[in-house]
Amino acid sequence: MKAMIKNKIFRKEQLKFMILNLIAFTLIFTIFDIIIFHQVQRTLFSKSDHELLAFKDMLIEQPFDKNRTPPPLDGRQRPNPNPRITVLKWNKAGEIMNEKEIGSLLYESYFQDYQLDEAPLDVITTTTIDDVYHFRYLLFQDPNNEEGAYTQVLISIDAEYTFVDNFEKLLLICSIIFILLSITASYLLSKRMMTPIIRSWNKQAEFVENASHELRTPLTIIQNKLELLLTTPAEKIMDKFEHIALSLSETRRLSKLTSDLLTLARADSAETELIKSSIPIDSFIKNICTPYIEIAESQDKQFWLNLNCHEQLEADEDRLHQLFVILLDNALKYTAEGDSIGVKTYNEDAKIYIEISDTGIGIKPENEKHIFDRFYREDKARSRETGGSGLGLSIAQWIVAKHGGTIAVIRGQQKGTTFQVKLPK
Image 1 (cartoon, rainbow, N blue to C red):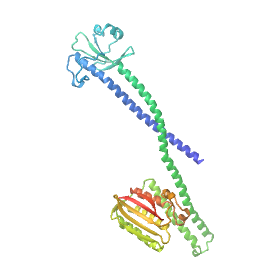
Image 2 (cartoon, rainbow, N blue to C red):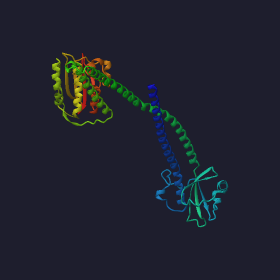
Image 3 (cartoon, one colour):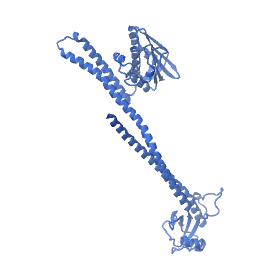
């Protein structure tokens, strides 16, 4: 039932992402289409407009305006007007005066019923004759024509209109194809966008489940021991020492687990900020290792140091201390009497290397890729005996990553494990 509800939520979110992506693609392509269409249209008509302005200048016998030079032909100005241009001369009564000049056939076919519109004076305008033939024209008063009221210069733009119509159809076809491609791309992108969300959801669910299990165990033990103490209120503390000691041990483990969970929660929410300072790495590690050397000697284990890094490291001292405590605790937990633990530092390729090695039980090759996973424990029974919760190495990896470095595990040639920390200077 939970899986069905989860899948339904995921499908709903994926559909939402798909629709948003499709809308974004459609808007982008629509804006792109509009810009391209208007740019092409303006470019096509600009040549005709230059021809009209140049022909007007020629009619009124004025030199060409530098800002309105007609398009050159083989590097020279056009000596003759465009053959598509027609000149109409109007009298004050709104009649065409140069019927013979334009030809009877042309006049009777196109301009016999054509009416003069005096409004767009000295403005290039588009008009349509018989709803078929398209023209751009310029209407102006010719100072050299005393008998006429206006001179109108027209240029046929049927070829431009045909091109614009075909281009418009081409854009429409491309838009349809693009929408189909956008649907496919939106689906694939939404599916890809859901992948990290699903992964995070699963990790969160697993995290909550594991955390609940880890918290439940010490709480159950503490509750049982306290209930046993309540059944014998007259007993002395000496007689119930084991129950009290176990309760305190579980309380400490619960406190550490809660602290680790809080650290990881803050790491996930990016709330924790590092407070960096300059740290002499060798002396810093030596101070951390001092108590562990004594603990190792008390457990008949050898502890050696090989510190060869005389560098200052910009790092968060508290977090770095927490990192080495985690790694040294692990080394002590998983080594037996007669084993050795060592810390080595050195410089290489402008980076600081720190290696914590042991000759303990080691890690199985198939488990190496999981050791930094939260709540992962290679030997759950042994980890519980030693107080491990499977969060330490996850925290260690986060601390190293927060400092811009990397941490890796290297299996020993014979036995044991080496954790290699690489930090930038």
